[in-house]
Length: 391
Image (cartoon, rainbow, N blue to C red; front, side, top):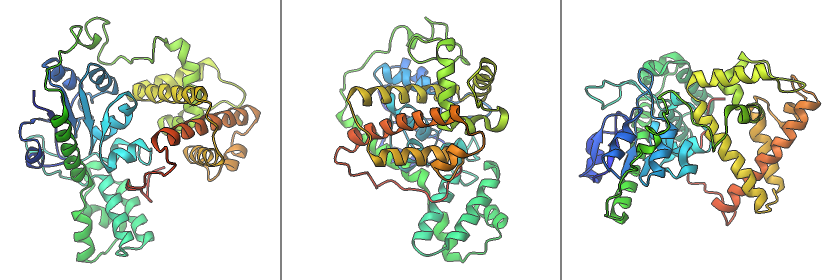
């Protein structure tokens, strides 16, 4: 069976078909699309674009199920990069700059890749994705075409616009920027989403050449959808746990890691003396209503397993692991340093003890990642970093 490519405004179909001439090109992925094509015995999927907003977006659970069923799922460029970052611990392949930025949490919001496009004519996009704006300005800054202060002002203007209004002309107008034609042309030519899509298509082409040609049958139980009565809006919990078993530890992890600050903001008063049932349930319900509960539960499960694996291997985090853990947690909580986080608003013995314990766990995870992903202790610097990123 040919590979299935879910494609919208990230790249023209001609770019993909030039590399994968036999591919089945489908519109941006929606909830259930992977299941439907896997049941038809397709083995290789490339997710570039995904629909959201007015329809249900493709879920991490769906990606995990299809990978577990023996298929190959590759993600890049847009929604595909986000889902690949969510599901790479489960075996999804991620390709490109945008995937690496999502995976390393330099960016974390769908708004970074969202664009407006006409469904009847999915290419080209009608607006500019924020991630293109960021990287274009970074490259221009590196070449000396634009000052850092000017670039940061333009980024702030781009962030203030809804993705449906985010065009270069509106961004420049909002920022009050007056740039030369040379710089404007340079910025407009940067299209990271399209470059990542082409790179991902080449990755799939290599997989197709090396794949076992024998067809694989989909599971007769249809990935459990018919057997366990899973609804379209239900959430799968890690392992065999129930909400009651996992809720306290999960919400404490959200709170300590700083992810709760991003997810629910000031909607909840965080505890100073101890975690109690009503706030816990309120946080769970808020995140579930946002549609992000499943992805967060998977991150939590991966984090726990990584800590356990690091301890099983008797790894010992170094000073750099602890320093990076402190920097990560301070930034996640909106503080400039670890010390500021410990003595900041709401400081107390309860909070300090748990933050310190969580810092140690984060250091274990960083040590594990360094040990097994970069065994030579040489960190991969090939990814595009970002100087300007949302908090």
